[in-house]
Image (cartoon, rainbow, N blue to C red; front, side):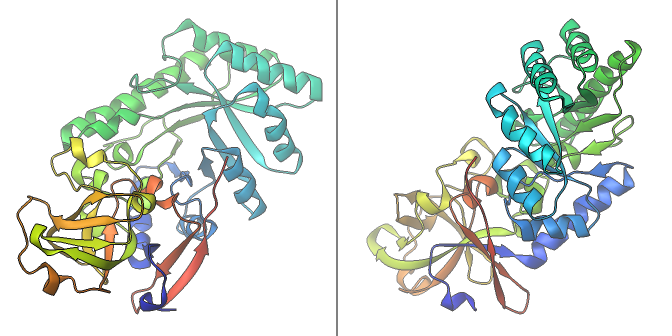
Length: 377
C-alpha cells in the first residue's frame, strides 16, 4: 500500500521518527540507571509496544483493564494498571492474574486497600499492589508525609496483599514550558516518591519499587536516585503540546492525520479538508501555550511542515487550512489544489490516536503497513 491508496482521513505513523523517539527515551533511561516501563495508552497498539520492548523496555503501563487484557493476550505479562482500582474491577483484575498475568493494581486510600484485601481473602489470593503518591497536587495519590500512607501500607501487608512499592505521576508538568521548571518538577516527583518509600521502609514495610514518570519529567530529570523505574507514554509519538513545552520539535512528531483537500473558500484564504474534529479530536491544548496550532499543524504528504499553515477550524468532518496569523493566502488554490494530500500533526497524540481503529505505519522508502489499534475500557 502507498499513501495515495489510503482512504482519508487516516492515522499515520512515521516509522523512522517513532524509532528515533523510542531510542532516545530508552538510551536516556539506561544512562540514568532505571528501567523504562512505557505507558501503552498512547498507542494502544501491539506493534508499537513490541518495538519499545525490543529497544530495552521492561514491562508495560496501562490505563484501562481492556489494555491489560489485550496486551497480555499478545504476550506482555508484566503489567502495571496505573489507575486506582475500584472495587467493582477487582474480579476482572483477578481473572487476569489467574490466567498468568503479573498484573499490579494501584490504590491511594484506606478504603481501596481494604477492598483489595477483602477480595484477596475471599478468593485466597494475594494481589500485587502499589500505592499512588501525590507528587504535585495534580490529581490522585496520598501525600508522602500523610499518616494515611503508612496505614494503607500496613493494611495491605497485614491483610495478605503484596506491597510492591510506590508510584507517582507529575501530571502538572504539562503546564510548564521551560527547562528549569521541568527539571524542578522532575526532582519534586522523584524526591516525594522516594520520601514515601523511605517512610514505608522505616515503618517496617516493604517497598521494593519506586516508580515515577511522565514524558516531560523523564526527559528533564538530571538524576533518578532511589528510583527503580520510569513510566512515560507520549514520547513514542510526541505531539504539538510536547513541542511547545520544548521536550521535542514538530519534526519529532511521529503521528499525523492524512487528509485530502476537498474544497476552497478562496476569498478567505481557506482550503477545506476531510479531517475535522472527529479525526483530530477537540483537544486545543496548544491554545494556552506559546504557539497556538489550532487543531493541528499542516505538513505536506511527506511530513514536511508547510510555512505557517494550521488547521485553524474544524467541524465534525470538515477542517479549515489557513495561515496561523489569520492573513489571507491569495494563492490558496494553487498551493493546495483539490485532491492534495496533507498531513496534520496533532495537539495531543493520545486523543488523536483514539479516533482511529488502525494506524498506517509509513517506512522511509514509502511502503505502508497497517497496524491494529484497539478501543474501550
